[in-house]
Length: 403
Image 1 (tube, rainbow, N blue to C red):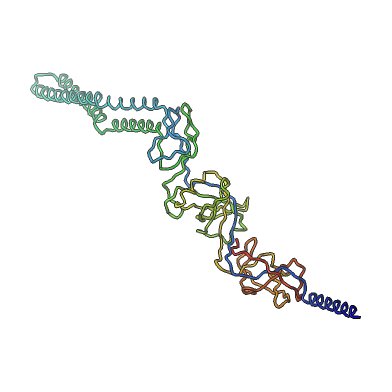
Image 2 (image 1 turned 120 degrees about the vertical axis):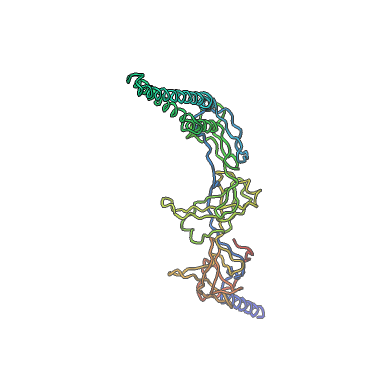
C-alpha cells in the first residue's frame, strides 16, 4: 500500500512539474538590448589614379639619342628627360645666324657706302646743273648742254633715292633685320625642342621610348604623376587618389570629408586611412553609378607608397557613425504587412509584439530610436514564437563593438 501511494505521489509531482513547465513555455534564445557603437559603411571597388598625370611627348619629328629617366624615377622641374637628334635644327639655326651676320657685316656696309657715293654724285650733278644754267643765261653754252646737265642731276637724284631706301632696309632695327632675328629665334626654339625637360616635380609612371626610336608629335613618350600640385581643397598634394564608381542607390548618405578605409588587394590585412575629397556632379546614366574621389592624407606617407597607379582597392566609406546607441541585430526584427518594424519583446515570462522606430541601419544591425530601452529582452522572429505566448529565455552573448 505504501508503495502504491509513493508511486501516485511521484506521478502527481511529475505531472505538476510538467504542467508548470508547459505553463511557463519553451526555452528560447533572447537578447538584452544594449548601448554600443554602430557604423554604416558603403563598400565599393576603386582604382588608384593621379589627378595630374602629364603625358610627355615631342613637339617635332626626330630620332631619340638619349633617355635619361625610367619608370619610378623622381624628377624635378627642369630635369632633362629625353634628347632628340639636333643636327637638322642646328643646321637651320646656323643658316639663320649666317644670314643675320651677312646683313650686319656685308649688306649694311655696302648699302651705306652706296648711299654715300650717291650723295656725292648728287651734289656734284647739282653743282654742274647750276653752273650750266649760269653759262646758258650768258649765252656761253647752248640750251642742249643745259638740258643734259639737268638730266644728269635728275638721274643722280633717282640713284640717291634708291640708295637711301636700300640703306634704310639694311639699317639696325630695320624690317629686314627683324625678320632675320625672328628666323634665328624660331630656329633656336626648334633646336630647344630636341631636349625635353620635366615641366614639374613628379614621378615617372610609364616610358614608351628608347634611344634610336623615331618619334612624332602625337606619340606619348613618358607619363609623369605630378607631386607639387594642390588637391581639390587647395592643400598640397601629389594628386594620388582613389576613384570608385558608386552605385547611385548608395549615394544619399555620402558627404565630403567622410572617413574611408582603403584595402589594397596585395595587402588585404592592412587598412589605409583616407577621406572623401570629391563627388562627381553627374551620374553615369549607362552604368547608374557616380564617381567618388578619395584622397589619402599626405601624413600617411608610408601607406601611400603601397598605392600604385592603376591598382585596384576596396573602399569602405564610413557614411554614418554612432558612438553610443541602442543596437539590435537585424534578425531580431519583424516587419508588418505595411512595413512597420516590430520586435518580440519578452517581459515577466510573456511575449508581446511591439512596434519600434529604427534609425541608422547597416547590413547586420539597426539602431533603435524608440520602442525599447536598455536591458529590454527581445526574441528572434524565426523561433515560431507568437504574440502573447509564454516562454523562458536564454540570453545570447552580445558583441561590444558592432560593425
